[in-house]
View (cartoon, rainbow, N blue to C red):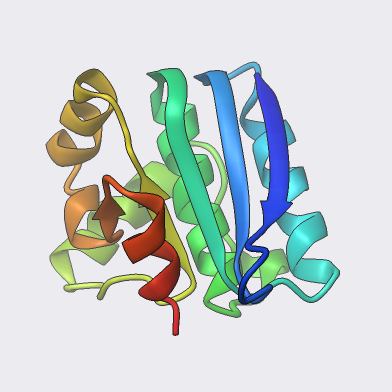
Length: 139
């Protein structure tokens, strides 16, 4: 998977992470590392551009959940991993975890959107089809 990171040139308060390829068991750690590096550098608003994401596995879903928790400010040392992360997603869904304020998703294709909908991520993440309203939603 390739990741390209840009900052919104108008406001500079949103970083856009463009994913290309598959977010799966082979690539999820790379995604998490990149998101953590951005967070550690001071980025607090992240738009994940899924326009060119071709596949999203359970490992990718767990990675999205972990990154959401990081951007929510949770202690990384206590975050669940592996199957525990999948169970945590279920618990968060049952407990009514609200929309993420600091991480949002952009333009997933129909197949990726179906995966997100199947696991209930549409209730965790705001999903946008156009970049301008997505960036404006962080303000």
